[in-house]
Image (tube, rainbow, N blue to C red; front, top):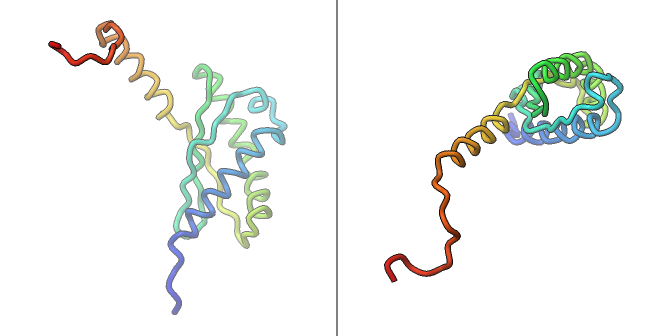
Length: 130
């Protein structure tokens, strides 16, 4: 029995990420998704290649994000067949879209840190106490 290729799910995940990004960049027809600013942040593929979680960052308010996620969910079946053809997979993974909160969380942390930091004069390069 030959050894399993443990990198294949990673390669398939990268292919899915690129294909979904291309689709969102110009081929999407759903009006809920078409005007939204969406970034594909990551794709996790199951080891058996049967399921893929596509993590997206969506700019906007909560109601807008919910509408975009509904639009993406309705486009998932079309994307599944498109990914299968593009990556030449016998059985394309079922695609589920998930909202990636890491970008929003990072922005909030940065804002909190900026409000806590004292306003310091710019560093002129001299050592303290010199």
